[in-house]
Length: 338
Image 1 (cartoon, one colour):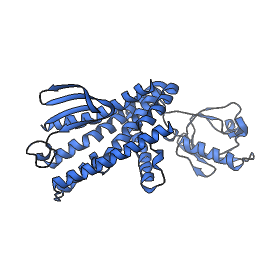
Image 2: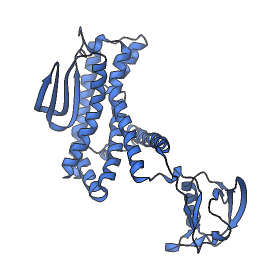
Image 3: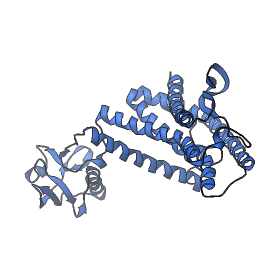
Image 4: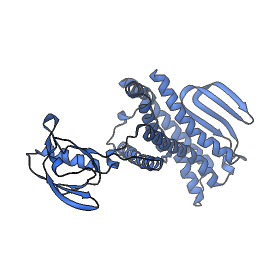
């Protein structure tokens, strides 16, 4: 079951990526020779007008074959102006990013769950046993905790945890709260909770999100996820993250299967976001054979620097060979860890 789910998940993501290339190529009247889902030998194929639509034997990957990308072509891709070529090359990544943002929007619409970093430290309820009940009121927005500025619920939680770690001894806590648009200084104590930990004893007033709020949060989450992914890629380049930490299709099958069994559709939607954004970001890298590598050559041409097309082809062939080698390594690493 986990294999089927993984194949479907990757198939949808790759289809969306290649569909971006396909639609923009058609829009600019570039002849598309084949639109394939999967790699290897053809299982099913049908030619409609000038384009062959196929499903191939290896259920990972896919491609759109646009005529005229080779050197010396008299028609097709290379004969179009650089801006059109740039749009076609960027369309796959754009579709991955757009579908990831849409999936985030669906997630927030279904679950209503948002990060505590996006929630103001506004008090909804106060526990009956909480020491803070004598000074805090519903609707108070906590702006400072023991002299530390509080911008959101996550920062408040972090400060309370740090105070527990350092050894809270029942001393007074200085709070600043915004009440009726006026900032008030308060003092209170933490209340003993579970496991010898001390808590403030208040419940967050979660945001009620409309469609616009969910859309804003989807874009914000997109940029946060991308930031973490870029840090991870930087770690690979600098050697802080080893190649053994990379996961390919085989390892993904195990991870997705375990996650689906515990979280169902919601977890799959999370994986869709992560994989889609990963594929988009990786394709954007300025590496030969990837979309990003081809985009670099178009940018050079747009700035007046023309590279011999045969030389460019050699770069892409070398890049593709290196990518195949990396994929083989990742697959064997997956099998070993599996």
